[in-house]
Length: 219
Image 1 (tube, rainbow, N blue to C red):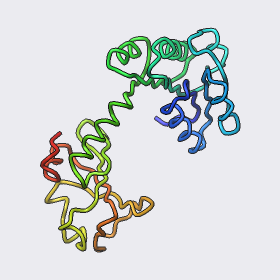
Image 2 (image 1 turned 90 degrees about the vertical axis):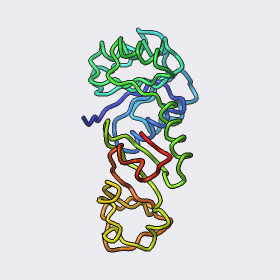
Image 3 (image 1 turned 30 degrees about the horizontal axis):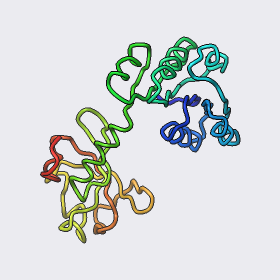
């Protein structure tokens, strides 16, 4: 579901990354943190930038978030403030609450008190890094569903100079090439243009076929 208004609680590295991307997309974004300097830095670019004690229920309620569609609870390391922001967001009627957790126990607590989605950024980043180290060709890996993933990878040496029509990757590896990343993502891929060694492919693939691309990685 697409949301247009957001509140981001906590402006650490993760919170700032989320807020910056949302602001860049043109969404209405309120940011809240207890650090005066960080709040001031966002005052010119966020819809609202507020300094508040995120462990204080009254202070969170006073923010007036009842009309906001999605809340991002981005503290991760502070269980008390994460619990308060999650609970108050749901009490105020926020439709969807995404909460960052540093471990599974914290994630279970946040789900229990109302978080609609719990994310583990450090863990997910670690998994992507490990997969990247296992294969020099894999640049990025994203799970689209329980079975399907999107992979960004450089063409294998034996693919370079050949077209997708010649290679027939769908038949051999069970992948669908959905784009090329030549500086920008080009979603139109001419099946008759030879592949370049330095231009990554974006491919949808079923997890069971990952090992066909790289025997070092089995999901």
